[in-house]
Length: 116
Image (cartoon, rainbow, N blue to C red; front, side, top):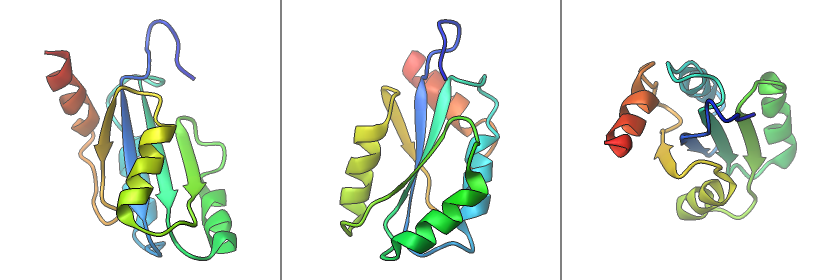
């Protein structure tokens, strides 16, 4: 949840397609940012064809604050990014590849640039 002291400033969006072996590390790196809790969110758009598998994988992250997992049946990276943009609460979205690892200050640095 956001609050007046820490409004959601930036959204990290991870679009994925059947990369369940790599995705957890990307998610963890996005969740462990230096920004205060509530000032960022992480959205995972799983574009894999198997909705049941997606739900199973999402369970590993159930209850994690600031994380939204959405299975998107309509294929395509552009569509997945558009879905992430529709779900985002923040005015700025940073996209992270599902095989990448975000530095702990990644979101803070991006948000800081927009602040300036």
